[in-house]
Length: 458
Ligand SMILES: *Cc1c(COP(=O)(O)O)cnc(C)c1O
Image 1 (cartoon, rainbow, N blue to C red):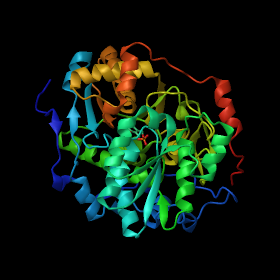
Image 2: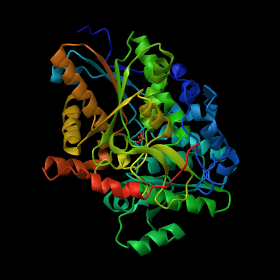
Image 3: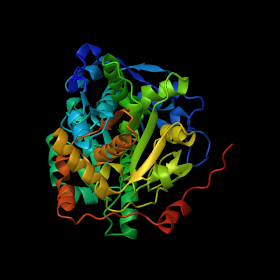
């Protein structure tokens, strides 16, 4: 093993990309457009303005501009925690006894503990630029709420966070971090919105879901003057902002004379994966290279591997535009899996299209296997991974073990999206042997499919 390659490669500030990369510009076929939920006609950009900030609505609809300048103010914010390191997992490779070379891009070096800050700061910046009075959002596990609280506090923008009630109760310290950054946090479902009251009247004991918190945050935004809603995943604009992960990774690998044979990421709504793979997918689409690209999702919420590719609502209350994506149905209530950030019924329309057209693969893994990988990784590499990120670790370890069998020295790159310090209840469950694997039956999934909207496609 040549030690010419350092353990950690940090790009310099000057090498940090100054533009985001819009993968849609290189896709042979575009992802299907958002539809107006009333008319089922493609939504026009103006129709998004009451909900989203204008610049972000424009980015959402822009399928042609290949590179989009990162505003200087956003670059300055990025420089507080970026470029993020690309790490060669020498110790993990040795422990596995694999000939594979394993690299990971670590996005956990900021207080939110995840990649979500990359989009949060961009979204808060555009909201401030438009002169908005405030923002609303939802958070499940709490990473997005934390990231956006940091960004809003930096730009002095009031923020209301609808936090899924089970998380709100299980993760009081997540609340404390958000409150440190002045966010107003409401457990969802709540009686502060019509949709929240309706959901509560049907099921007063519900612990809530991401889909339901989205409905509340959207309603709050459109009923509060000069206030807009922001979302931390799934949307095209979020994948755009997250492209910085992939651009930095590719540049760092080029400097090492490396190129990945396999790129692996965990998939909740698809934003980190979409960002990580963007420039590699560009090579794949143009025929310049042909890396395998693998999404890893939880077996308890298997949107790619067992979902339907169809138009669906992005929220439980059915107030959002319809997106064509791999979905389990917006009424699907995932079981209490510990990787809160992956418990979403749908998947990015961009990734859904690429998966449908077979440019990428997907696998679903059980959570005990995920935590086994998390603990193994932590011991070798000394980073305590987020349960979400550990899905990608599981995928990378399994590929590296396959290389051990075949003797192939493949180069593997995976996204380590964040740290797991707020997930110690989950780690305890694993370490105490009380963690179980819940996999929905076909009948469970059918219930979600039955409630999906019927959309005639042109
Ligand atoms: C939110 C989150 C994810 C999943 O979200 P994507 O949009 O699919 O990237 C993964 N890892 C961490 C640490 C997260 O916070």
